Length: 185
Image 1 (cartoon, rainbow, N blue to C red):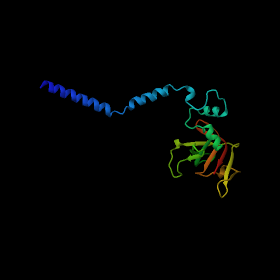
Image 2: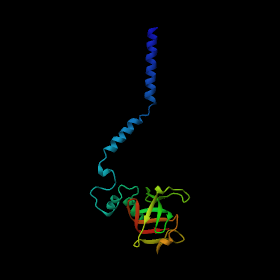
Image 3: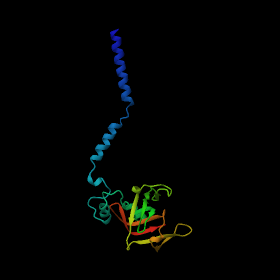
Image 4: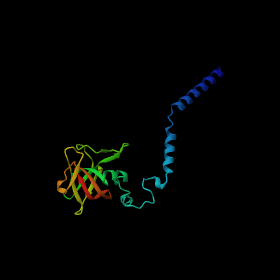
């Protein structure tokens, strides 16, 4: 009788161990491995800008390094000929606010854009303040009927309307964008 109880107890413990081992997903060890790899990253690996590169883009990105908003990556900026893209959300007397317009370069080399819907309600924390001065150039994009060819005509701040797309050249300082050129459509 005593041997039966020992065998039954041993069998129960064995089944419980098997169930616990078989039902665990092992994600704890995967998380620990990812944390270790992130800690081991070299300073140059934390961003795409090489440590020895001394160009204007590196200086501009360092100027707002602690900020929430950053200018576009160099390859994307070259493809769209702008430092930052957005959608006009609010217009004030001498400045305006935009929502970020994201852009990606697809595998085939084409560009993919995404921005919030014009009907979306965005908190002020998701808007970027754009402050311009008298030296900022404004251009409106005009399209021909086929939308393949376009031109820019010089215009002013008064021509800017809510929900227009903007392509800007300039830089961030304390999460405020200071443009030298604004193109909109």
